Image (cartoon, rainbow, N blue to C red; front, side):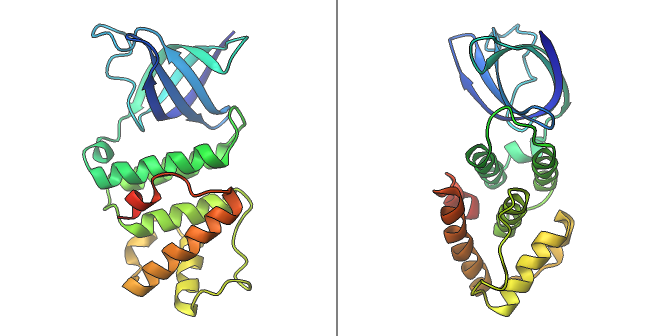
Length: 212
């Protein structure tokens, strides 16, 4: 059975000398893993179409025996080269992918998560890799998971609490107008560190690098 979807590539890794495993985030199917046979060959039809954080339409044949499906065709829409040419942006994008992988099940519809990740990557491609990007992403992700903080129970200072509310209620572009002091950044980083461990069981990998 051939299925079609739009997707963002979250991760790739070699399977054999010629084939590649490609992990996608899609709105209707959630996280899907596909095998791109021959993708590592120079003359592969997949050449130039499978890299981190690309957005594409793709088709695949569903496997009857595993969660690794056979990738058939890819029609590329966006490459987000601005992310992959900047180490700080790449680390932040990779951390967002790690958060998503830890917090969600495979092949479960994630339309709102897809919108969140897509908008984050689009913003990151053309703006600096500041710690506030990660704070905002973590807070928006927690909200989508139904884990939004109860502000009446937090011990954040009033100024930092107001920043958290702004992160949750505003678009990515509004982050540029916020001014965080160094103590506020430290307070927010530490508070979210504990909050994530409490609700997700452990800290998603790569957070320290994403905040550096």
